[in-house]
Image 1 (cartoon, each protein chain N blue to C red):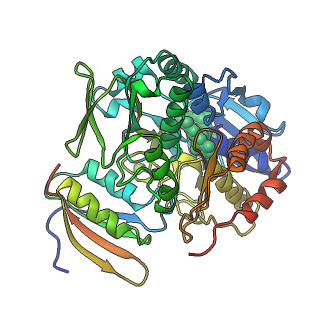
Image 2: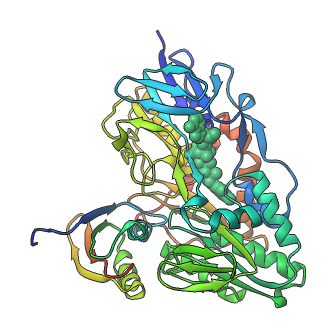
Image 3: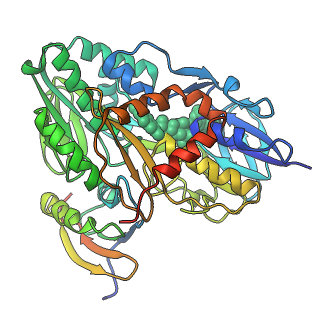
Length: 387
Length: 81
Ligand SMILES: Cc1cc2nc3c(=O)[nH]c(=O)nc-3n(C[C@H](O)[C@H](O)[C@H](O)COP(=O)(O)OP(=O)(O)OC[C@H]3O[C@@H](n4cnc5c(N)ncnc54)[C@H](O)[C@@H]3O)c2cc1C
């Protein structure tokens, strides 16, 4: 009898995992709140370059034929009795459960932010929000653009720096850079938290005349006065605010509730990826509390580890990150590290930018697992070295 | 170390490569109140200068920094929020 594997969440991690399982051994079901699959990295280009292509495909078309898809939102998970309940009233059972529910933006945590995001858009939630931001950038004639992450946890840590550099590039191309001031807010001591990457990023920001306000954790926004205030007591006035909202884990009631941390991230074993206290429950992707960057590459590598574990093979996650960083003007770098290998400095090149674009192009194919041999080779060749 | 009587939050940021331990500290700071004690565990040696710069900027106190064989333990007291 095949064992029943239930995957909650049809995003990057859930889709890759479901496709990687062997249908002769496992009966695989994906339950996902959305029938559409959004390629989130494209939101950056929708918002900052006005890219037109809609980066969305139906989830059904991305899953292998052997995978069942249930389009429904999970509301409750009881890990003790192995029961999953949904908004439409379904009750789903399982032998193995994989939680791949990602994180969602939650502007309600910061006074003024929901109103601000609704008016100006953002590039970490939906296609409509990213297009709204593009319309503001496209119409921007001059003044102060303030851009930053509101809180320390950010989906795709390079994306704030990428945003400000692409805004700079846009304004230069349009001949409006002279009439504008660009201010980059960060809760960290420096523009990029990992020192080795910062050594590359900080001089570029300086050369492009971008002001940096470090230790800026957004506390509240005074939308009347157009001012952002930080917990640390600083403030900045904006004409165009681009604030990345805080993120929270999925809105699911868990039994026992203490598998979630205060930000609703799942307490996950760093190596086995099992959810604390349950041998038959795994978590992958952005929704975990792993001390790694919240990235699609992370979700991909974690899906591989869980697929191996479900096949009964030895499997351990090493904390590998591999995030591309677009530096604007056609150049890029990579942020590569793991639990025991710190992020190393990587020279910006045109090739690395091109690789980011290629990853985007092959995303839909990579979900099916057909490119795994190529990825395995790539990850091996680019593995971080001991310090 | 003397027994703690005040709320003591343990933040385990060992193995954090990117974005790094300062992320976990800032998240704990957002949730903290004046008087709280935060104990941060990290393996990234960059944590020391970062925590000192953070404490200077935010007006909080670094009580101790201790190197143990498997980790660096930083104890902070929240004086300002
Ligand atoms: C601007 C931007 C740029 C980025 N750039 C990069 C990049 O260059 N490289 C990179 O690697 N990553 C990048 N990322 C990050 C990447 O998109 C995410 O890390 C990745 O999608 C995480 O995968 P996941 O499977 O954990 O979650 P997601 O892909 O977010 O999927 C979560 C799924 O769970 C479903 N779900 C949620 N709640 C429920 C529920 N209650 N019931 C049922 N289903 C539910 C959702 O519908 C969704 O299908 C970027 C992200 C952004 C926003």
